[in-house]
Length: 224
Image (cartoon, rainbow, N blue to C red; front, side):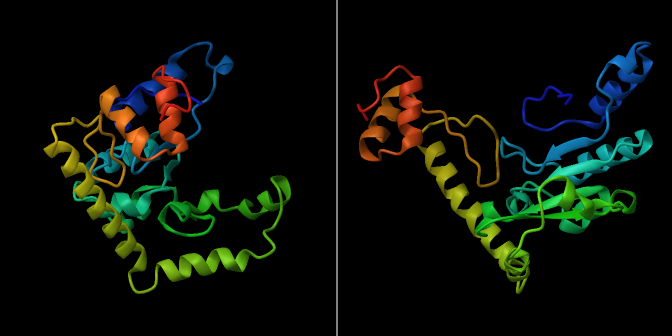
């Protein structure tokens, strides 16, 4: 895996092209990891989103270089609901070779839906059943979840509601004077809190994650 530096969780088309050219212009490239595809997340792990123009540029470079563009869509619904994003599901299907629609992060019990757009990548895909595990015995239950989510706009309704609630939380932190690590307009919010506030939160709501944060900051477990 070849990683690219990023401050906001997104990578740019020119970075991909530079890495691709650097690899093939190296006389010892056969001793290196060969670039095989470009993998992005929308939204990113930082809650940021790709614009249509950014994805179009990435898609163009990937096709010029013969690299499939794969989008991690574990939180895809929240990216589509973000007021900052001008990407539609149709845009994603047009510009990506593969993307997946997350289920568990939007209320499904289990599973993700992988969408393969590029016909060249569809061949023999189902042989992964033998190579990597097996056929899900009750697979119809997985499909029913996505059928239900995409009936009557439920998928978008859930996504919009989550983002609206996250914006309320964001605004509450901002009004109290706290800064945010990333300018995220999705349901992922990262307020920066001083240690004394973390301690107060730990006393009022003892979640394992909160305890772990306090522990990492040097406070003994059990004190929260």
